[in-house]
Each structure stands twice: as C-alpha cells, then as structure tokens.
Image (cartoon, protein in one colour):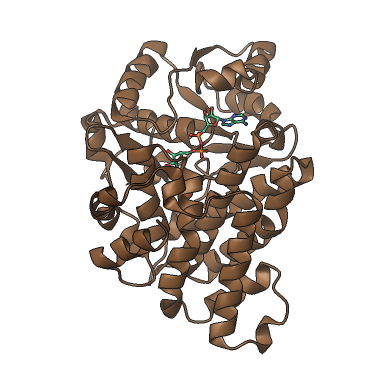
Length: 383
Ligand SMILES: NC(=O)c1ccc[n+]([C@@H]2O[C@H](COP(=O)([O-])OP(=O)(O)OC[C@H]3O[C@@H](n4cnc5c(N)ncnc54)[C@H](O)[C@@H]3O)[C@@H](O)[C@H]2O)c1
Ligand SMILES: [Fe+2]
C-alpha cells in the first residue's frame, strides 16, 4: 500500500520566528506580498507585528483585512478580487484557522480560475496548479491550518460548512511563533487547544492511521495533555508548548483524516456560530464512547500519554474508561460546557444537524461505521 505524507517545505518555531518572514520573502525573490487577516488582529497589534517587519525591511506589501471568522463563500469571492487588484505574488496569512483557510481558498482560485465557484472546491477538488504561494503565520494554537492541506468554508445559504482537501494548497512556509498566540483570550485558548486535542485523537483512531501518523498523534496528545491547562492559565511556556503540540497534530491528521467529532461539530458552527474548537470539545467524549469498540488497544495508548498510571495492568474496559475520563477532566478543567443546549442547540434542529454531519467529508474516516440514527443518538445523549 502506498501512503502519501505532505508537510510544509519549511517551518519555523519559537519566539521571534516571525523575523524569518523577511528572509523567506527575499530569498524566494517575491516582489509584493498581500498580508491577509481579520480587522481585530490589526486592531490588537498582532498582524501589525508582521507589517512592521515588512516596513523595516522595505518589502512591498498591501494589507487585506477583509477576512471574516468562519469565512463564507461571498467572503472568498470578494477576497479573490482584492488579491487580483493587489498584484501580489505571495500571500502572508496571519491568523487562526479563518484567515489561513480563507487564504488557501483565495490562493487556489488565483491559480486555478476554473474553480472560481467556491462550492466546486468541496472535497477533493481536481485542481491542476499549486496555489499562489502562502506564508502562514498562526495566531491560535488549534487548527494547524498552517501545515494542513485542508480548509473549511461556510455556505451561509445552506447553513453548512464544507471541507476542502487539496495538496495544492499547502503553505510553503509555516511560522509558529508563540508571541503571536500569547495574546489569545482564555476562552479562545481553551477552545482552540481542545480542537488540537481532537485532531490528535481523531487522527490517531481514524481508519487511515498508520505507524508514522500514530507517532505524531501520540506525541501531540502528550504535549497537549500536559500543557493545555497552564496555557489557558496564561503561562507562556504552556502557550509555546501548545503551539508545537497543535502543529504536530496537524502534521498527522492532515495526511490521514479525522472522524465524526468534526463531522458533527461543523453544523453546530454553521447553524449556531459555536466556535469550532468548543463545538469539537463538547462532542469529544460522547463520540469516543461510541467509537470505543472499533479502536483495539488505542485507548490504552491515549490513557498512557494523558498521564494515567498503571495502564498496562488494566483490562480493556478499564483503560478505555480511564482514557475517556482523563480527556473529560481536561475539558472540564479548561471550562468546556458539557451540554449542547448550553451552546444554544435546539432539539428540533437535530435531524438537520445529523443529516449535515452524516454527509460531511470527515465521516468516512471515523473508525466505526456510523448511521444517521447513530449520529442523532449521540447529539441527543449530550443535549
Ligand atoms: N484547515 C484546517 O485543517 C482546519 C482545521 C480545523 C478547523 N478549521 C477551521 O478554522 C476556523 C477556526 O479557526 P480558529 O479556531 O483558529 O479561530 P479563528 O481564526 O476563527 O479566530 C477566532 C477569533 O479569534 C481572534 N484571534 C485569533 N488569534 C488571536 C490572538 N492571538 N489574540 C487575540 N485574538 C485572536 C480572531 O480575530 C477571531 O475573532 C474554522 O472555520 C474551522 O472550521 C480548519
Ligand atoms: Fe478542528
């Protein structure tokens, strides 16, 4: 069996890593950059850290601050026009998953104009050309969009989010500088951190998992398990560890896929605007219980790297319960609500949510085959 693994060509980690953007732009002879982000990241002085560097180095650039959280189809279409007008030959995407994902869609359409209808990019789009080069600077520690080949777009008309998977969209350079994510408010740090944990766990138990991705996912679970609490408490070392942990999870899941935590989280964000990481976190242990019988001894490995003692002495039922308990404890400790109704979910919407989740691109990767009724049952169990 042939397996493909894709990572960034170049990635920089650690405090001060954003300084490398200048060298990368110069060494690759780019003429003009388009710095894409959200208005608040400029307002908070986060995206301006990047433009200050470009100013100092005399690099030509234009700012585009029109990216919206959970970018919509209309947002992408407008942004493509702005990108064309700028004449930029490289995009410097600064932000969490939203600006980086939006930049992947924009950059893909720039070099593959036959995919200008954004919906045509859903799933595995057969694009022909690598996207406009992207230097991705992450400001959250969760999605790992800077290293993945995926991006997620919101279809506002149909109240759904759709996942696009395309090896042509991978950023050529990733910048993982903890100074950029140190400013995250507590709730965002908790939600994005739990998103990263879900990536690592779903990637570890997904149908396509294998030794190389197991290695990445287990390391990511270990780092996140020991760092998320202190990161949420505002500790800089914890924030730095999370920036690396989430990236390692991205190196894994981008290459093997996820499962129904993500399928079920996407419609919650599309319909009720629940932040992505929070939606994933609320669903995680309910889905883990459902999937347990299809995971062999993998929950023992999860329990071990989550710090549970004596897992080798435990029988299957005990180590599975121990893994789920350790994960639930972490979610509780960082303030994730337990019931979906706390996030505004209404029982009458469950059939729509379940239909949407069932059709999601992440569903085939779930370790256990799942029916529409199973998904309805899981939503109801945590309403
Ligand atoms: N590409 C992938 O593989 C992948 C994986 C998972 C999720 N996603 C998608 O990514 C999006 C979510 O991304 P996200 O969770 O990173 O959040 P986000 O990019 O939507 O940002 C959320 C909010 O936090 C603010 N923010 C970001 N960084 C900050 C900082 N350092 N300090 C203060 N405020 C900051 C933003 O301005 C925004 O208002 C969703 O659309 C989700 O579906 C993509
Ligand atoms: Fe996610």
